[in-house]
Amino acid sequence: MAEFLIWMVATLGAVGGVVLGRVWGRVEGIRAGKRESERDAAEDKNKRVERGRDAVRDGRAAGAPADRLRRNDGRW
Image (tube, rainbow, N blue to C red; front, side, top):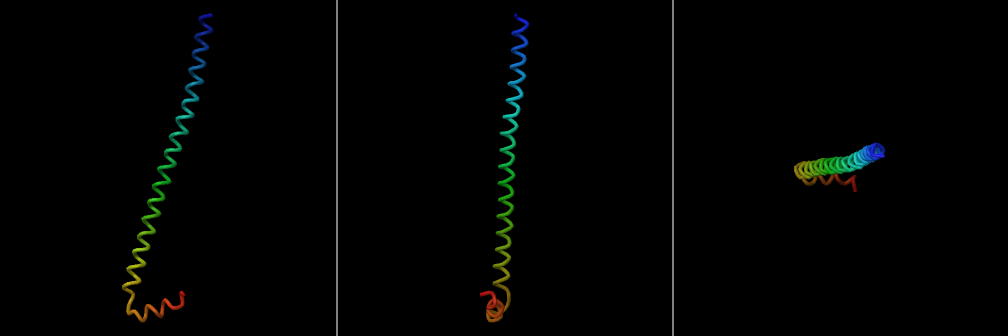
């Protein structure tokens, strides 16, 4: 009977370890996914900010106001 209890405890420990490992792995995967998503969003935001700054800089220093108006006229 004692041997059966030892085997039962060992089996429950093994099953519990497997379940705990799967839960832990899932939680770590979710955390890693969130970090990657946040990093991608920050990179995308930085790229958009730089493109906007470049556009403002190019728009302000693109020559005479009359020339800018002529070029921009077709975009309206």
